[in-house]
Length: 313
Ligand code: GLU
Image (cartoon, rainbow, N blue to C red; front, side, top):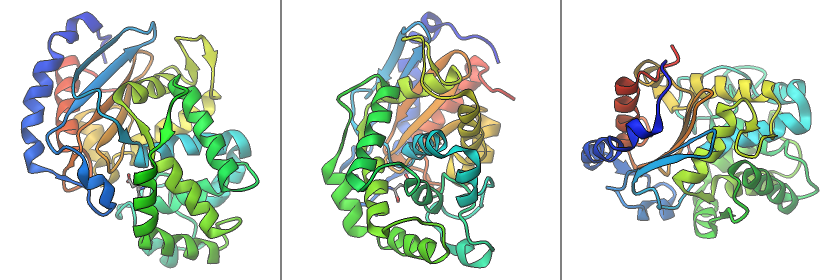
């Protein structure tokens, strides 16, 4: 990996974005949450932020979108802060599954019936039940506050239309949560846990917000712009390891080979990634490939990694 100089890439970024944007017509916007299907198929944007607060962006970086699975990285970190490693890994495992992100297959097949990792839906729902607070409202408020502090943006909010749309159509997640309750994984009321989960998946961000959150991970838990530690180093290490092994659904191995950076994507087409010690990066491209990752976003990151020699490996 080589150090990348912002001025050197600022000129090339728009060209790489326009080149990668072309493949968005081969992808499809997620529609199983009906509200997500309204996203613009051809959009592609990127924002990079360095430790001194300098940034570069290109394309549709002003687009707002919901975090979806990207939020799972940060609820994991919040659950670790509030409960410690032992309690968290009593409820979720540490291994990739090779199954779909919303599969409940192994919850019945493999004992003790805990989710394989915190980034698949079952694992993230289990993590939602570990967030502190007396009820769903308090847990959601605490989560939103944590996300706002990481993004350095007090105006982050949940997109109520997306949250409602998911809640009304979440038959699979709902079945999974009830199975988790029966397996003894979920604490408390199942509908309350699901409400916390739908809320954090529906927090609305831009690429700049993702880049700022990623920057904290790139600097091992310290916000370099404010000079403030926000996350213990060990928990960032855990989060980045999960991002590397299972952050990009069942294309995590391929992404590690082609891009070589810790990353997490979501069904709304967002990707959060980082260059350790250097940059936080936020990308959005709502059209997804067959593995569920932003088709143009992955292509853009592959190009950047190759051209700038960004791989950690
Ligand atoms: N809220 C989405 C779901 O539970 C998140 C999925 C994702 O982004 O992978 O289906």
